[in-house]
Length: 475
Image (cartoon, rainbow, N blue to C red; front, side, top):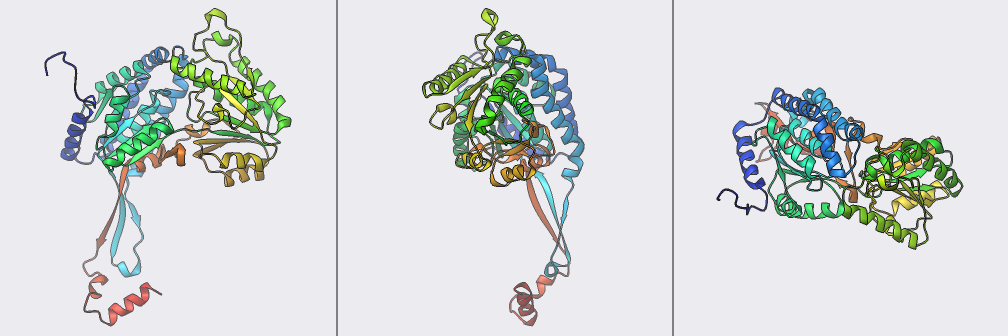
């Protein structure tokens, strides 16, 4: 191809990179503990060294995203996840002895976790560093090589990822490709050894459909409508402050952000006042406050405004917490807003919001709230506030969701000892911690038979020993 000629490869070079990485994987075999820990250390050190560059890129991608917010909720959890992997990797890699039954004696059984090969990672734009780098670190911990398709909706961060990873890894170890939705579709059709996708449920269906043609196993980290249940005895000020944070951080553009609130009618006025007060205390500059992250694009901004107008037209009371800001506010700044009297027919109650709006639905009893959750697709996260332990236990027992935080907001994501993932419409598979290591590994069972193994005594023609063995197996 002449220099400067446009590429005709729909995968943006990913097909060639996959072939090269697979050849390298087969040539070099399974990396040992030292190699994996070194790869993770290089990645960690590069993230820390690139902090300011990532913060500047996020500011460019979002329009406004405070540097501290990028450090706290995008880069910080990524570094902590890598530290957890390095700390526990030796134990995760150790072969596990498994019990051998009497009739299979003498012999030894064990389980070994083996790298899959080459992992394809499609990252999301809302946390453009962490949602690329934590899956990548997990793949490296499991001994794999990886190709990352960075999100085109966060182009500045995508370029930082490509430059940073290209500076610390060979292309046969880790590579980054950048492109639009057409490239992403071609990427998902490649015969990876595992495909890891973070994004919407709708796109997740397309990813799984494409992966089926090559029988590529998938991990789908999706989203959905994550509910908050307020019990009668909830601490309203505590809950309102937490929920305000969950809706305002990253402008609510978080897959585990609270999506709607279920509360007894008698608690809603107090919650309204406390929520509004908490938002205003966090952002005293109103819509022009420099700590208020903005919506990532004009298209997403227009979609959010449409959801709000639909709710208003259908009878909702719209209560924005921030109204001031004037001409100094960014054009995509959006106030955390309560949508009172929300009903199921509203668009805002039918799709994931991914913005700072919070519909409030009256649920007079715990049983009513549980029913409301259970007749809808299973959410990625669920939150419950209250002091009644039996009531909380009932919510935990009778609902199914990805993860739960009790009397807190989004904190389960930061617990590296817990798996993170959805169920049903909110995802397939989990990562973080040992579950992520196992997800991106092949669990290979190995049995070592003794020389004088008893099974050699029960072959045809069947005799009394064989008949005795059959009776023992079926007793």
